[in-house]
Amino acid sequence: MRLATGNIGHESSTFTPVPTPYEAFTESSRGFHRGGEVVEAMRGTNTGCGGFIDGAVEYGYELVPLVWTFAEPSAPVQADAWVQLRTEFLQRLEAAMPVDGALLDLHGAMVLEGSQDGEGDLLAGVRAILGPDRPIFVTLDHHANISDAMNALSDVIIPCDTYPHIDLGERGFEAAGLITQTLRGEIAPCMALRRLPLLWTAGNANGTLPFDSVMARAFAYEQEPGILTASVAPGFAWADITDAGTTTVVVTDGDSEKAETTASGLAEDIFSRRAQFSPDLLSFEHVLAQISGSGPIVIADAQDNPGGGSPGDSTGVLRAFIEHDLQDALILTICDPETVVRAQAAGHGSEFDAEIGGKSASAQGPSVSVRATVEKLVNLEFVIRGPMYTGVTQKFGPTALLRIGGVRVAVTSNRLQVFSLECARALGIEPATQQWIAVKSSNHFRAAYEPIAGQVFRVAFPSVQSHDPRDLTYKNLRRPIFPLDSI
Ligand SMILES: [Zn+2]
Image (cartoon, rainbow, N blue to C red; front, side):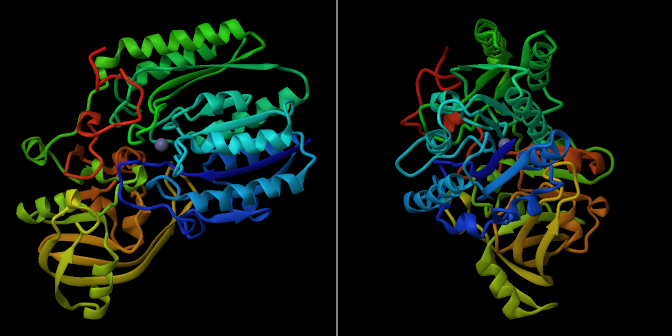
């Protein structure tokens, strides 16, 4: 049994100024792997592909890797870049034929310049080569905007069930088991999808309501006989496309009616709780009023999360930390390559007049003009050891650790979400020793930081990507939809 595998991964925001050229993939921190390199790079990682590789050992199929890459979230993929990426992926698939099926770990929220549905376009190419009968099984990120085309072109779709996404590998392994059973003729998957008129705001994550109750309902359905998987994809609200938002996906063993009624039941349960899906970020003044006990006090600069496409250079948190003269305070990170170059020119241990951040868009600024000391100059790169994306490398590039009074800020050349403790440790700082730590992350940081935190707050510092969809201007999104419309 030979199964093609691969991924061209991207989560595309139509609200960010950060462009997505071909180099966003080839120079991506997560790599651009071809052929056998894919298995070498992804083995043992907590990703869908890591789960497929484990599946090959468990189920004895031969994995035929094509291309695996994942660009950091940003604007829709540029048209010429997409032609190049898609062409290479499909040429490698053609060359790999015959295969018995495909196991793909896509993101699910990729938008292209000129097309709203990146994954639908890729799957159309894969289906054209595989023909109508060979199975295509797809795992997705939790934040997938699942289109009708993706539903029609694949046999099974399994979005991950957690946020922070700590079950990507598990879902990959699950898909591996199901495609093996399918090819052996032991099961006949039958999938149904329901799209809800709901933009699910980002604060809803593991350990909060209504997230936990919604997922408990999905897991209860999975215990029913004949249901292979029942999933919820909250979608990605920062894509102004027709199909953005929440979907339910149910796969049964050969029972289309049960798939349809279960997908509807899950959708109705979610929609009945829609009033609970409200933006939940605090102001920094509210945080100060709620401080109690010991640190670290972990502040999520949730709206400037590079992992959701934001530029990562907003300055609200730095300004607040300096204004309040916080001590033992660490900010991870601000992306500002210009300031890194200036710090390098000033040299280790020197002071210089810095203009930090706020350069990508007016909503991200203004820059913080301040006298800063260059405490450290490093090439910030490490392997994640925490529960999220375990084993994956993050490359922040040349980085300057700057000190302004009791506040230290890591100013980086590359734009990445911070969700692991290794980011601080690679700078020589044990995060548990800090009183204040700010991370540019919406929720993923919680997996590693909650266990060491005294308190955790998610704060609404200004950014191009508000967490309240009512602050954003949508032109293509289907209407009516909650919470933009009163339904
Ligand atoms: Zn996600």
